[in-house]
Image (cartoon, rainbow, N blue to C red; front, side, top):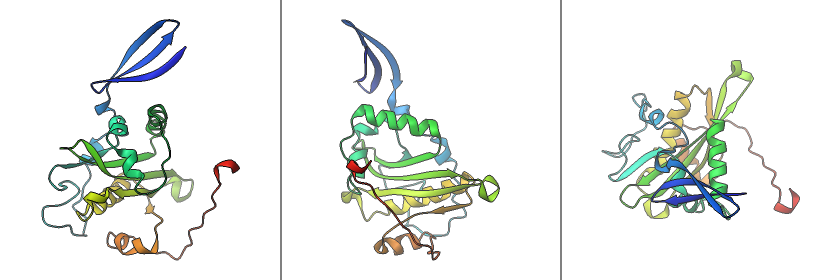
Length: 214
């Protein structure tokens, strides 16, 4: 028996091949299959946010035609991986691999991937990830980390990176995290300092493995 996904007019089906038969079971409209509940973003309170945006621009009101929302299952077809490729190496990711990772992250409930969509083009043009770590310290508290902040080259200069970062900051506060942190290059320090991040004297260290070492 073989299993795969089929997409017809954004309605996805789970397909099983048994002998010469193809059995379809409807999975529903994947445009509504979000990584986390969109109402969480809608309910964020920015009243205490002090850093300013350009007139008419804020996390609740991004530039015209753009929308901040959770990652969706259909973003595989909307350029999400292409945007990430402007930040770092993505590699070849099949639809099946994307859906497997999407569902695993959704079930884990520790990953909050936010994207900005150009509603006119139906394309993802920005993304950022908030990862929640469960701790024993701080009375079994939670720590948040910012990862993979990127905006498409053609949309830069519109404060979209700032919008995504502020959304993650306020989301971490909403979720009850005791702190939020990130790693960045020296070139990016002024950008993150303007939204309240500070250097705390610690060193970021890393050890990487090549594919043939794993």
